[in-house]
Length: 234
Ligand code: URA
Image (tube, helix red, strand yellow):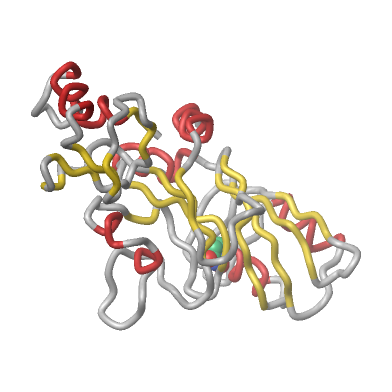
């Protein structure tokens, strides 16, 4: 959230004082509502108009999405609906993209941003951003499976995963799994190599971000200032 006068000034078209004057003169609307308070806090994607004309949205945007199953983690796809289809119209023009991918049938925490530099840094293989997944498998997980994860599982094609951590639930077909990298279908392939195919997969954290328990599947919200700063410290 940012002050309205700051957002107007960030376009470079008005000074902060000119922006304040425009707002106080009643020439500015935020998401269709007139706003005469320069200090009003506005959402990153809010549509701001001056004399009825939308100003260019500026500044990076960071959203947390609770991805539902059935959508692909991409900005466009010739056949399948993408995660961006969950966002309202005004967010469609901001150049947002998913920072990282979840499979079509995977649910949970997905970061959407238009900050290419940050996304690039978070996703670089050497960054080793921690991710935590909740999973269910067909079969029963054992102490040996946990040890294998801790030692670094070798996938079917010979790829060796970095050591991770797995904690079992009382129901032994369920676990939380920590990994520090993001290979293609990594968790499904890790569990397949143990002979226990994944039947449900949900990402519950990504680096310093934890999935907001108040976000229903298919819902999203802007990251808080603290969450954004934590991502930059990552
Ligand atoms: N590992 C997988 O196998 N799938 C995902 O979507 C994420 C991690």
